Length: 398
Ligand code: PMP
Ligand code: GLU
Image 1 (cartoon, protein in one colour):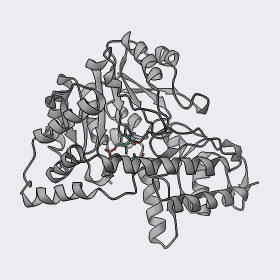
Image 2 (cartoon, rainbow, N blue to C red):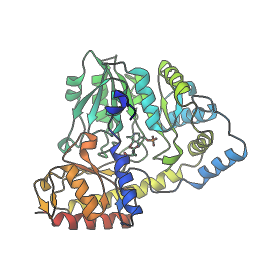
Image 3 (cartoon, rainbow, N blue to C red):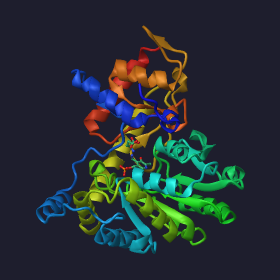
Image 4 (cartoon, rainbow, N blue to C red):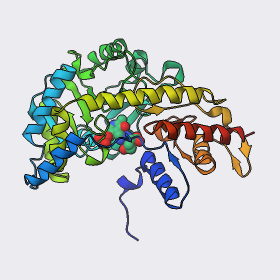
């Protein structure tokens, strides 16, 4: 038996990916599982993006790319940040990595020292805390519940900041809750951060285009008071249905970009040359596909909110972005059916998987026990059938 490092032994496995894997295994056994666990668009990558990748292969983009990414892609990203978000990043401040997950991990590894505190509002995406742990930092969790639409208040943030606070990671639209901070709410957060110039602001904006109703997306980096210490994390996975292509980026203060590039040069080198050319086509080509997918997600959001509200005991907010629903499910705790007793949200997620054959994710994976996460990035038919099954399985509990 090999000894595994303490670093990895203390790391939690990604529950979103684990649940998705479990549902794939059940499917392989012939069980008809509806997978609402992993969050990824169910659409195919748009044709003009795929064609750019084919062209890149034909044009021999087969050599190592520059560590921070092709200059043409970094320029395209800088232009996108300028015209879509009103931000002024130089291409040299942008480092392309293997997905937003990698870009985020790079930034944390490049800026957090052992013992540094990183503020993470919860519910939070599964990987933030583990990345901070890897850097030997201390995750400081600031909880928000259904009563505040899962958003933290400025007072909570002020109370969480100490002399050791190195960074805050803010995700809006949020995974796992779908909540979106309004411009006024962001401004109130920025007002607090303005008083603490040592805090690096890490804005995970991967769901920026998946936003509903009249809400307009505002980048945290667009507030002058914190612009020079804000890192924007984004990528092509969600907006362009390109999860498997693995292209994301960080747009950072110059010295952070240089540190991330140094790290990436020793760890992974430049991201896939072909995927980078595809991402360039995504940013420079027509944006109609983004709007088409957004519309489909909005229709599904309306559908799942309606279906979830018909389920006794589910308490749901109305998510204004991303493609997740995050119902509070504690009404079922203590109930049983056959061999199953629902002790907590983990038991409920397992019950739904095994009895309803619907894969969800336990809220505890996002530091929010008592909730479950459902991804509605799947067809309307799948969603209707999934909710029919969930309702039936839950009705058996008493
Ligand atoms: N941040 C959040 C909040 C996410 O949900 C995801 C999706 N897994 C990522 C970052 C990473 O996305 P990717 O690595 O696919 O670009
Ligand atoms: N962001 C997606 C999710 O939360 C993808 C899986 C992952 O990378 O965690 O389900």
